[in-house]
Length: 457
Ligand SMILES: Cc1ncc(COP(=O)(O)O)c(C=O)c1O
Image (cartoon, rainbow, N blue to C red; front, top):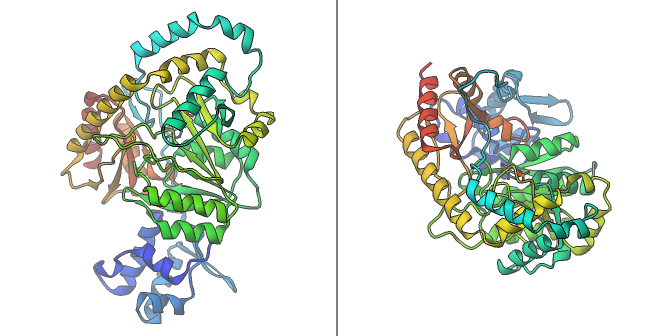
């Protein structure tokens, strides 16, 4: 359990004094909101009442009353001798709504998947088949990957400013396969895994299957809280961290170069391995796009994938690590099962050897769809959001309704969406809704129509 410092706890509450009503009610409401927003993780042990009163500059009586309200409504768990810790009351621990997939005409925005680039993909497949004769000779066993693909990926990193040799690349069947292999190899049950909140729900699924203890650090559309991140690393001593600094799914936030350096230093100093998921790093929608700044260092392992640049059906991803680590991973019995067939790797080679047109087309479409969705949603008054610099989704903060309730109503009207708790390590983030802008403008227009109708129900 994490013990919050008085200052850390107070900074999580934001400008709570500006809330209407008496101070006790405002303080309790601010704590509830900070928990649901993921700024104060579930399980956080509160500082003593006296130290909270000093940091928040209120009387001890105000703190005592506010905490009593929270305790009575199930937000605080108090154990004699070990203080009070944040918990979620049962009515808040609702998960994402169970979706009905049985009827046709349903608009499914639970997945953030860009459309396949048909022409380029078919052309690349044909060329790969023509070149596949050599595979019959060379690729007898699942190995660390086809030499030409490992070379191409190493070259790409090197050109982007991160010198890399082919021996530092292990090809996998996508980024999730890469994470599965790394977690199997590196996780240590006695120490937690650091994740962002919110983070990619597919990664949370992989980590939960390992019954890993998770320590969450908040990320918002405005970015990461560097001080919170450092404090959590020092207090929770995670063995492994899973981070998405490039257009975090779902917020779209992009980590600053400075914080990347800080994270690499933290990894070094605290014996922590950071797995950096760069699956979305090509989806920079700014004009012009910035060059990629890789988060790199001795304690950092990078994973990537073709699933967003090319297509989720092409199951090709990779791990970039020290050559010695790659050799160890090759010995893991899971590795053969998590590697893609050679022909898929050849198709990836074809597409990645000259990705510029694909990339331009992908970015242009996503940018237009993002702006279209943002225009449709603007000014409705039901929600607020920040237009992200990249990625695949808008992350809406709903003002007067829980996201799961709204998603359930929308599902009844034929629109499937994912609510905030799906992206949270502790099932909080209940006021948030993720809307991917991967659909066509027509689909997005229809989706916002349904959502607005659901709001009025
Ligand atoms: C951050 C992140 N990593 C990985 C993936 C999936 O990668 P793959 O399909 O290669 O397993 C996604 C898909 O949305 C994602 O958002």
